[in-house]
Image 1 (cartoon, rainbow, N blue to C red):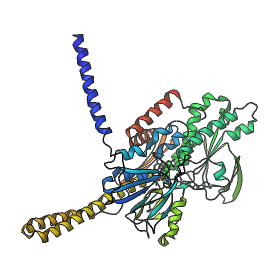
Image 2 (cartoon, rainbow, N blue to C red; image 1 turned 90 degrees about the horizontal axis):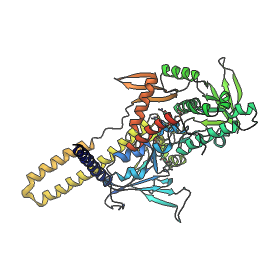
Image 3 (cartoon, helix red, strand yellow; image 1 turned 120 degrees about the horizontal axis):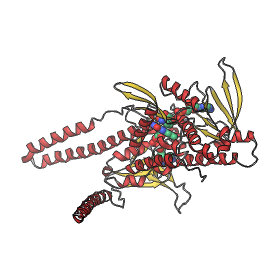
Image 4 (cartoon, rainbow, N blue to C red; image 1 turned 30 degrees about the vertical axis):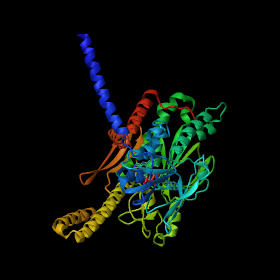
Length: 507
Ligand code: FAD
Ligand code: NAI
C-alpha cells in the first residue's frame, strides 16, 4: 500500500515537473532571433534611455514594425521607488534592477541595444552621436546612428543650483551607484566615529546625517536612515548611539509639498517622534567638506546664517536638465522659452522638431516628473507607434486594392467592398486620442513602518498615513516591480533584513 502511495506521489511530481518544464521551455524559447537584421523596408526607431518612460514604451511596442535600436549607458531598468531602501541594505540593489537584454529578449522581433551615451542629436541630418563611456573601450567607442523616428527618454540629472561645494561633498540619490556610495559612507561615518580616542564633538559631527531637500526623495531616505540606526546600528555599535542624529533641511515652509496638508502634518509629527529634526525655511547656500552653510528665515522674516556640521550629506533637491537635452533645445528655435525640459505637444512630439518625441523627466507635458507619468507616456507612445505602423500598412493595402480594381474590373464589387472595410479600419486606427495622464495617487515611506498615501478614490482623493498605509505601500510597490524575479528578490530581502538585520559591513 505504501509502495503505491509513493509511486503515486512520484508520478504526481513528475507530471508537475513536466508541465513546469514545458512552460519554462515555451517561455525561454519565446524570444526573437539572436541576430538583429535591419530591414530596409522598415523605419528605424531609436529609443534613448532605459528608464521608466523608455522601458514602458519598449514593453508595449510591437517591435516587428520597426528596426528598434535602444541606446543607454545603463544596461538595466531601475525600479527607483525602492532605491532609498538600498541605501541601508534593507533591499539589495540587484533586486530592483532588470537587465534590458532580458526585456528585449521577450519581444516578438529582435531589437538592438548599444550600451552608450547619446552625446549629440543632429535633428537636421536625423542622426545621433553615441559614445561608449564605460571603463572598457574598444577601438571604436564613438560613432553615429541614423534614425527615422527618435524617442528621447534620458531623464534628468541632479539639481544643485550651482551652490558651491555641493558636487564635491554630497551624495546624491538617483542611481544604483549613489545608493551604494551612501551605504558605504554611512558605515564609514559610524566606524570613524567609533575610532579610538575620537573627540566627542567630532563623534557628534560624524554621526550627524544631513539630508537637503524635503521632497519625497529626502523624506524617504531620512526615514530609512533612522530605521537603519534604530534597528541595527544602535545594537551593534552602542557606544555612538547617543550622538546619532538625522536632520532634514528644506527651503520651503514644509516638507512633501505635493501631499495634502493633513499628510504633511502627519509626516512632520512622525519625524518628531522618530527624532528626525526638520529645518524648514532653511536654504543651503554653501557646502564645505565638514559644514553646510544655510540661511534660515525666522518667523519675523529676519534672515540668519547658520553653520551645520555633518558626517554624511545627502543632496536631494530635485531635477535639472541633462546636457544632451540642453543641446537639443538650443538647436530648436521653438524650444527657446522652455526652461524645465523639452516642450512637447499632446502627442508628446517635441515642439519645433521633426520625428522626435520625448517622454518622462526630460519632457515638459504639464505633469510632475514622476515614474507614474513617465510610464504612462511611454505606453502611450507605444500605442501611437503601433498605430502609425498599422496606418501605413492599411494605406498601402488600399493603394494596392485600388490598382487591382483597374486591372480586374470583373471583381470590382468584391474589391470595392474590401476597400471600404479597410478604410473603416484605417479610420478607427487613425483616431488616436491625445495623451491623457491618469493620476493614481502619491505614496511615500516615512520611517518606523509608516507611510503616507494620497490616492485617487471614486472621483476624489483618499489621504491616509500610518502602519496600514505602510502595508499598502509595500504591497503596491511589490506588485509594481518590473518582473516576478524582482518581486521574489525584494520580498526575500525584506524577510532577510527582518530576521538577520541589515548587513553593516562596509564595501
Ligand atoms: P529615468 O528613469 O531616470 O531614466 C533615464 C534613462 O536615460 C536611464 O536609463 C539613463 O541611463 C538614460 N540616459 C541618461 N543620459 C543618457 C544619454 N545621454 N543617452 C542615452 N541614455 C541616457 N516616481 C514615482 O512616481 N513614484 C515613486 O515612488 C518614485 N520614487 C523615486 C525615488 C527616487 C530615489 C528617485 C530618484 C525618483 C523617484 N521617482 C518616483 C521619480 C521617478 O524615478 C522618475 O520620475 C522616473 O525615473 C523618470 O523616468 P524617465 O524614464 O524619464 O527617466
Ligand atoms: P523635489 O523637487 O520633489 O524636492 C526638492 C526639494 O528641495 C524642494 O522641496 C525644494 O524646496 C528643496 N530645495 C531646493 N533647493 C534647496 C536648498 N538650497 N536648500 C534647501 N532645500 C532646497 O525633489 P525629489 O524629492 O528629488 O523628487 C523629484 C521628483 O521625483 C518629484 O517629482 C517627486 O514627486 C518624484 N519622487 C516621487 C516619490 C514618491 O512618489 N514616493 C519619491 C521620490 C521622488
